[in-house]
Image 1 (cartoon, rainbow, N blue to C red):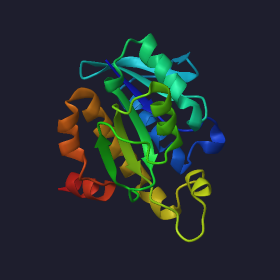
Image 2 (cartoon, rainbow, N blue to C red):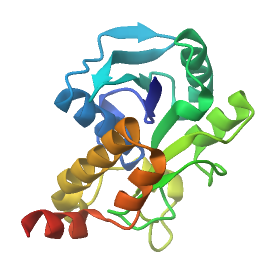
Image 3 (tube, helix red, strand yellow):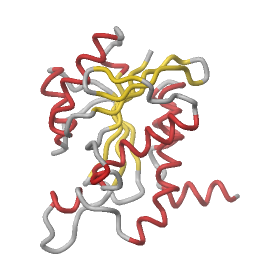
Length: 198
């Protein structure tokens, strides 16, 4: 069984912020795979089910980003899931908008949600699906940038990015992580769209 956690901040105000791309992606997968968020456990909205025969728990922490580690720990314990079967879906400032990357482990890269999970679990060997949102230009502060909506050009491509990341997430859930990495780590939403059109 895998535990998939999309990272974001709860509430309508944050719903379409760059920092909430993790929520948007797990919402898409939950809808496509008929995994409704039907329960609330450990300050998280939770759905359970299977995708292509693989049992999965999908969750959105209802705490704010910098407190989500405790939810991860309690969910892993409650469902008796190995931490290496934890998949965290989150935004990444250090990748250009539209890129995705699957990693098996690593540091927090300045992301407060990932920082919280590493701090509470005491390890960093869990899977991440990182989704590029790019960095702000000029003098714009990082905090303001991640807590604001995607710009008009990005909004045009956002559905393709969510679709690509959703397919990558399903691949991580149902296949060996290295297979998913080989399939998706060189893609971005624009090249993915080009491949789909061929």
